[in-house]
Length: 336
Image (cartoon, rainbow, N blue to C red; front, side, top):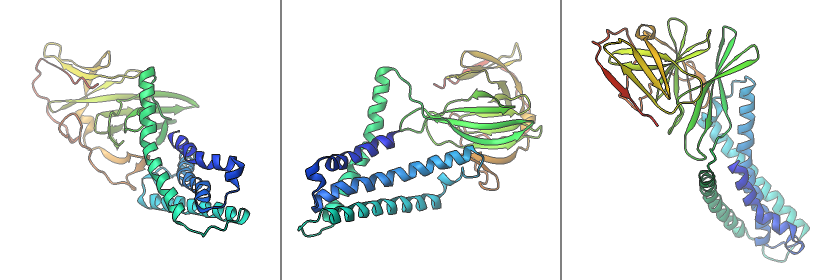
């Protein structure tokens, strides 16, 4: 949306000059530059948006194109295509103007470079200012910002398709809502995950020995049961991993309690207190099957890279490990 607002602002001076009869017939260098360069700049911005939308549609249809946005070769090719198309648009409009509205003024390319530089500086300023102003208005009016959901299909088994979805929750910072989408027999169910309050998306995906899937990013670890379409959140206490079933809906806090008297571990997920069970044995020898970045990439395309936990020292899933002696403790992480 912000790109199309910027394109509209870039085109505004050219549209005004073409709308006024006197300036429309002007064939001087400066007038021609202002009537042609904005359209070229708009083309340079519009092509990446259109191709990005096409890739998203193809990915949604099941085509293996989700890796393209993260490819340096694809980026350079898109940059070359956009700039070349923009220059061709400028030259085409310029030549048409000089042919239709001839002038005795000496032909010079300098005004075109000047106008392009002015619009480039304006465009950079607009890229920063428009989201900031929009975000300020939303805060003032109490509205929340949400971008469109992006869907990355992970696997299809037991008659169920599992996809990871994310959407931006900030107009210019890397903050996202996360959720899983389960689709079976045409019906869809969703499971919200812990939101990402800063940084790129990167999940490692593993297959466990019991057939379940393990998702691990810088914030949390999740176990997904495809048959039941249930998602469990993991917590490591000492040398033991515990798993608790995620409740429905969003949550904005997470912690745990571990009592000697009860012998029970509870995960505090939002307002819910969830019974947790030890699952360390299940996590032994997980098989890496891929990762989620700008899409889902199988292990054959992206080799395993460990992620460093954001809230705690890095831990490596291996086991089994002997549990330590129980002690009374209550640890609310208070992630807000």
